[in-house]
Image 1: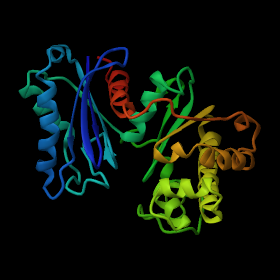
Image 2: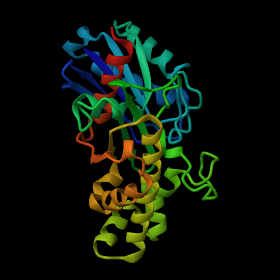
Image 3: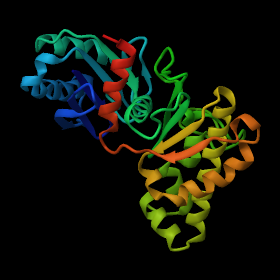
Image 4: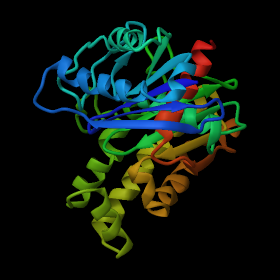
Length: 301
């Protein structure tokens, strides 16, 4: 049994996850605002405390945390962009102390939310059976993770595969990360909406379906940036599938159409020409399933 925790800017969720990926018991709290780091941690501890009341708690053998980033898995710390109270916060240490207080002194692994999504899709979703894969979340940000030679590849700090901050326009717009022309500053839902002149990505998708030129151009621009980043990644590590999830992926062919079209230009070498692009198969539970999958693979206890 694995305790899985999914930490984001709006909610902190937890679940007890069986060995086949089934969520047996779950709990969630809103991510606190206007508090310090320990105030945010208190919400996570409430989630743990609620799950500890379940009969299945006695079977917990490991804990997996998937968190918005940046993270540093080597230090067990998180500094999520969307949780301002956490900067270098020792979430692994604090979580393990909470687990011990509830009678479960088990090891904990920390991965970024993009890596967690990757672990989930490779275990039970669209990347299942593929030995080399890139999985992406395209939402208010753009994140991702890698599976190489059949195993999750989080890298030393847990951030490997963070395709959102590959530069695809060398003199492009300044990205909040400090670089220029990143995939994220072009292809995120926020950027699509801004270039379409609309409130959000959902409104941009609605306008594009109605034939609005600015909205269609915004999705084409996003698809082109994603294609360049995906092709570069495929050229570097020879992935054979790219799985895309997140709110923007819900736009369907508005995003996937231009992405696949532009990919033919960027994925020009013979060994990347076969690259498959597909939508993620798992829904809102992917973060929890992925945290459990990452813990199972990286801890192997």
